[in-house]
Amino acid sequence: MTDRSIETGSSGTPAPSRATRAPTPLRADQIEVLRNYGQTRVTQAGEVLFRAGDTTNDFFVVLDGEVRVVDDFAGEVRTMGVFGPGTFLGDLYMLTGQGVPLSAVVSEGGELLAIPRERLKKVVTEESKLSNLILDTFMARRLFLMRTGVGLRLIGSRHSRDATRLREFAIRNRLPHVWIEVEEDRSKAEALLERFGATLSEAPVAIWQGEDVLTNPTTPELARIMGVKVDFPREKTYDLIVVGAGPAGFGAAVYGASEGLATLALESVALGGQAGTSSRIENYLGFPVGLSGFELATRALAQADKFGAQTAVPEEAVRLRRVNGHYRIGLAEGAEIVARSVIAATGARYQRLDVPGLAQFEGVSVHYAATESEVQRCEGEEVVVVGGGNSAGQAAVYLAGRARRVYLLIRGGDLSKGMSTYLVDRVRHAENVELLAHTEVELLVGTDRLDQVVVRDNRTGEGRSLDAKALFVFIGAQANTGWLRGTAELDRRGFVLTGRAMADFALEGEAWQGLSREPYRLETSMPGVFAAGDVRSGSIKRCASAVGEGAMAVALVHQYLAETGV
Image 1 (spheres, rainbow, N blue to C red):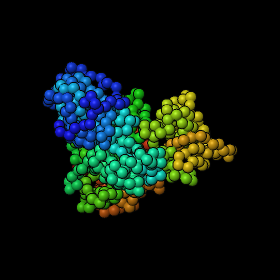
Image 2: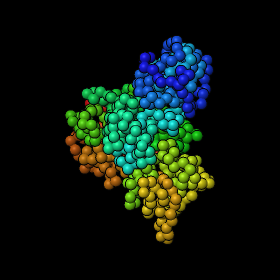
Image 3: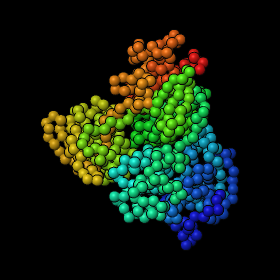
Image 4: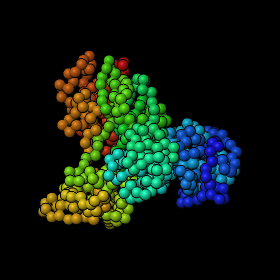
C-alpha cells in the first residue's frame, strides 16, 4: 500500500466515467483454490492498492467490499471498472512484468485475497480449471484498455517515422496508450507537452504516468520505463539461444526449456512475431473456432515462463560469430551473449508495394497488419487489401466486420492458388468484400491521409479509382537474415539453407573438421546453429509447421550437444 492518494470526486470516490461491465464473480470453490496461493487482508475505504506504473503489485480477489480501478493520468480521474465480492483485479501485466497502466482504490472497505505475481504464474500454469478463465479475462481486459486508451501518452506527427516507430512498438506489444496527433489536435498536444516541460519541436514525446517524460526515445528506452524489457544475465553461457519469438521461436523456447536446457529467446519488436499481428488463425490444430495472434503469443509466453525459458524484448541480434566452439551473438545495443547452440527463428519482414509515395502514408493509412488498432482507424470506411495468401484473406474477413467495404486485390485470376479453401469460401460469402482479380495498385492519392487508391487491370490496362481510406498490404515477405550474412549459407532470396540443401563447399570450413557426419536436417552451414520456421529456405509458411520445426530443432540441438560436449 502507498500513502499517495488518488484525487476523487465530491462523494469521496473516483468520479465515474465509461467503465467495463461488472466482472463475473468467481465460484466459491475457485476462490478456495486461490486461497492456497495468497493471504487475506482487511481493507478500508480510500486505501490505494496500487498506483499506475507499479510493477510489483499483487493479484487481488475481492472477498468483501468494493474496489474501483481508475485511470488517473495527470490528476484527471476516470473509473475504468468496479469490482465487487468474488471478482478479481488484474491484466496481462501481472504475467509479463510490465507496469500497470491503472490505479486501484478501495471504495468500500472489506476483505481481499492478495496473491503475489510469482505465485499467480503458478496458478496459471498449474491450475488448469482456473488458467483459461484468468488468461481469457486478462486478454479481454487488455483489448478493452487498448480500445479505450489509458496509461502511456504518445504525442507526435503522423508524418514522423520516429512517432510511427514508437506507435508500432506499443501496438505490436499490446500496450494500452493514448495517441495524440499534432495534426489532429495541436492545441491539446501543445498544452500537454508544456505541462510536462516539453515542446512540439522535441516530438515525438512519450509520457508514462506523468513521471517519465522521454523526448524521441529509442525503442529500448520506451520499453524499459514500461517494464516491457526483461533484463537477463549477459555473462552467462546459455545452452540454447533462440533468436526470434514467433511461432517457431516460441516453440523452440518452450521445448528447449521443458527439456532442461538453459534457454533464452530474443525478439526485436514484439513477442509473437508476424503471427502475433494476425487477427484470426483458423486452421491451427486444437482451436476449432480459431485464435488470434495475440492469444497465441500470450499462451505461449505463459508456457515458456512455466518451464523457465527467459524472453527479452526488444532485443535485436545483429551478428553471429563462432569462438572456441561457442557462439557469440552481438546485440544492437552493443553487448554480446554466448550460447552453446543457436536456433535462428527470425522469420521474414513484410514486402512493400512499388508505388510512388507509399512511404508518405505508411503508419497512417498504409498498414502491414490488421490488428484492432489499425481497424479502429478505418471503421465504417472503404479499405483495400492487397495479397492472395492466407494473411490477406484473414485480414479481409476481419475488416469486413468493421469496414463499409473491402476491396481484395490479387495480381492473378485464381484466389485459391495461394489461399486456403476455408478462407476463400469466407471471402466469397462476405457481402461487403469485392474481389478484384488481375488488379494492381498504381497510385495513392491524398495529402496527409489516403483519400483514393487508383488501381489498374493488368490485362486490359483499364483504371479505376477506389474511395479507400486505408491500404493493407500482404504480398509476402523478405528473409530477416541480416544478422547471419557472411556467417551462414543463404539461398538467392536470403533465406537460410539447411541440411542437404547446402552445397558441399559450404561445409568445408574449420567448424566442420572433426565431425564425421552430414548436417542435420535443420542445421545450417554452422554446426550447432539451426533454422526453423519462415526464415528457413524451403519451409512451409504456416504457423503450425513453424511450431513443429521449432520443436524438431530442439531435438537436433540435444544431439549436437551430446556429440560435441561443448
